[in-house]
Image (cartoon, rainbow, N blue to C red):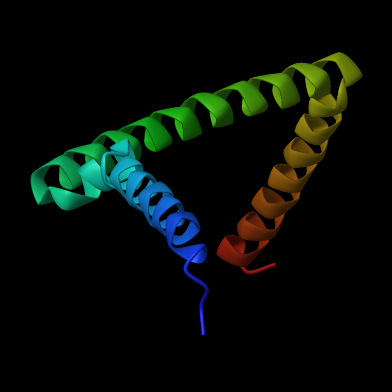
Length: 100
């Protein structure tokens, strides 16, 4: 059985737990979750920011990659290859059309 001297210690532990529960109930996260309208608004804004951040981030990455490729002069090589490929396709298309 518990001793009579444990009652004040137990009471202080219960008071500490009560205080922590009150702090948790007043936390911003739980206040947002308690209101459906607030939660929807918060999620909507979060989605907007995620979309905006994705577009800005992708734009920056594509710009950097384009700049690096331009500095390496890889794009003209690809351009020449594409030009040769297009001319080969046109030659083959002409052969098919003329029946040669």
